[in-house]
Image (cartoon, rainbow, N blue to C red; front, side, top):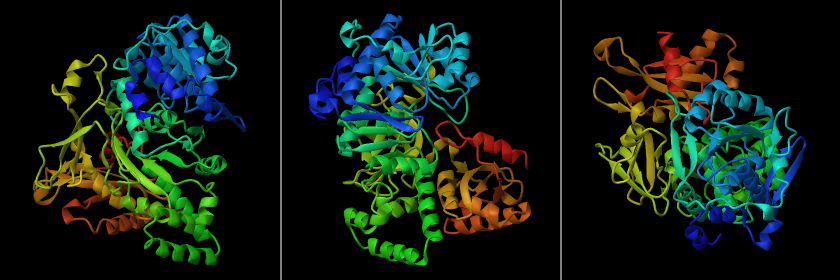
Length: 571
């Protein structure tokens, strides 16, 4: 994609043309989007993608969608969702992505705040959409996404798209600086906030991500994350579309089905979260451990050789058997959303798949910085994207301070909440992230934690829970960990804060220790061993073992307040 064409786009319609490669005959027959329809894959080429978005836009306008109206999308990640997203923009609407993992009761206050005029929903979510329509005066109709047969009383968005685009009535042109999306954050506590993002910000972010990682029309992305979150939307949809890449939506969280899709499409890139890489690594190691002795020995030998081979392409060829099982072309994982364990990154680098971590928030469209194959330091989250400024406010003795950001990617504000907006967005345009970190001499950003999560001990020392959690999760008996402050009741620290860890055992630990008391002792002992390398004040005073997975937000962040309540009930 020509960067000049991206930067010169002034209207929403021009941006939509860039995403669908309108008028480019060479791209018209190339695959744009694929999704599973029952047991078979269905592929939409770019020419058809363009036509569908135009026809849908025309019918949305016929249905009464005016420039600036909000239209909600309630569906799983799919080609149909992508068509709907661009179609709503073409119609002049503002997209309100809703999380399909939330129930009607959780979505109701979001829909009430956003006040969409239409709601587009997956067929199997039409019932939930009907409840939202009944509870919200603004919603005039529920349309079913895609080609699924709608239930009684519903029209299909695909059925609406049969009119020729030539018959479309053009909407009033909207500029890229106007609000294009209203995204509700899924914070670990409290009511979600509506983040207003401009298309200019989203376009800048997607274009610079695509340029930084040098994406091309030869790439195939397998999409595994929810596209209603800005991380997948920008990195896994908008950036690939700008470069003419092919996106395949798996529609499953099962590792075997994801692996099968990567192999089927011979995927080159996957946008992921650290948890996926951790599970993927464990799966590879498990298959090696369960295989023939000669294969285990060979893998060990190749690993030692790979450690001294600087070229990642050579390492990719060394592990040819592994890569043939993944289609042979997978070369990059892009990772964000949570801290990445450097050991996991080094494992994939060793076998020939680059791991490139980035950083951002919903309020920043979302990517602020990113590592690339040409500028990568495992453990850091890379350098700022072009056009983005990063500053560290009030750094402490260790150099860490609050990360603040300025640039076109920053949100326009929180919908209907000017006071809340003013708390994080100052008059000079700097967005205060609430995250802590530092910049090294070469401009790489290192994120060390959240300011609100910091544990302040009685002796004045600060502990970042994320650092301790990373150490605990390296323990072979620990699946996941949550570290938080609890009140100290003994000794000189009584009345102050102390470090408490809650850990969830792995399946292997549960199988090896069926007795609950034995399990707790074994896991706690292994966890204490895993944090021995940390300074003494950072090590948990208490380690509690629970067998249930932590409650999480839709973006897979642990609900710390829920864990805190669980701990309080056991004090």
